[in-house]
Amino acid sequence: MSCPICNERKEKRFCPAVHGRICAQCCGEQREVTLDCPSDCPYLQQARQHERQRDTASVDRDAMFPNLEIPEQFLYEHEQLIFGLSFALVKSARAGRSLDGHTVTDGDLIAALSALAQKYQTLVQSNLIYQEATANLGHQQIAREVETMVKEFREAEQKHLGYSRLRDSDVLAALVFLLRMALLRTSGRPKSRAYVDFLFAQFPETQSAIAPPDAAGIRLVIP
Image (tube, rainbow, N blue to C red; front, top):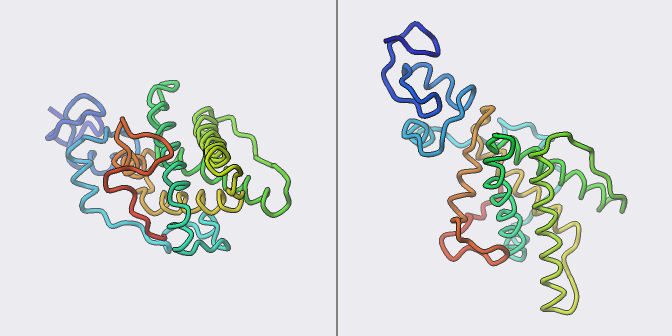
């Protein structure tokens, strides 16, 4: 039988995205482009093993907030903040699996992180709260989860220290760090979930919120 996508080549491998068999070429060309490839697809996993991680030269420089320097010391001093924000991304991505039938992609997390970083950059520079409105419900949900985590983090500091020492500039730097990581880990394909799956691997379903993971944890490498 012929491949149901191209209707030309012979079908050879099972594709869980179409619940049927397709040809190898369509699998390679349409993977995470038109096909919503599940994370456990063996062909997707094999492809990721052979893909080279993107470098900064392949990413839009302006998208990475190039004027913001994030020293390595910041990552160690604010490790719990980064873990907390990462957990918020994971929580929103898992909840988004059933939101209007939409599966959260790397692009969704990148868009939400970029919007939040722009908001905090404006807040830090001018003390004005500004956030461009978005009609995307998924991006709104991601942003709400992140903002809720920031609020809970400050409340936890207030409870244990008697005051909150978390600055908006710290939140900005943490958001930009996660944004840069996302931009470098995603494949860049429209339906890519490489970064989403990376975060899922760091936070199992039972992982708690603000405390860092007990397992390997996120590898803190400055992009």
